[in-house]
Image (cartoon, rainbow, N blue to C red; front, side, top):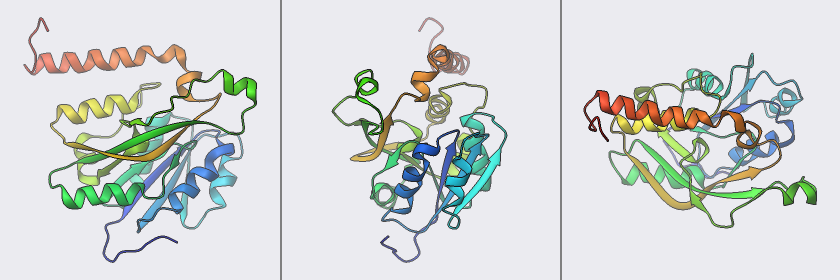
Length: 239
């Protein structure tokens, strides 16, 4: 049972989903199991053609379900942001899982560390148990936890997110990297907790594996950042 501590600020959690009926219920369950309250959960269905909608609606209420035509991950997150009412925002991909104390740990940082805009935590990757041995052997899974500079490991103040701006929607992958670089360029402050807050599922349909041809987006994102910094005089023309 969630531990409710009086007068806590509301945290809005946005879960975009696209054809992820197999894992969505476990992702939602990991949010419902959080030791921090109050929360609101918004599932944005990005044009799924499988049974993701039925899975999400099984949790209503308290889960709010919203459908949009397939527009990409950035657009789905932006849709959730517009619907959210919280003082803090968090995101979770439909195939990943939060640890039970994720929000409690990160909210404690905001309480104890003034001036922080967003808090990250560590990530532990795991191979999905539904894969057969042949599929598992094709996936490399690091044993160690790692700092999680990813959307699913972040908790951010709503005003900081609005100040940084919404996610760009033209990137096929890498929309969060682009957003994070832009936020740091604006001088926003982050904090990394040592605890594992996100368990990232590795399976045969991970976006990074499925969309290998779009990895040039990362190069374009970094080049765009360098161009902005040169234009603003933050780095020399020959850097």
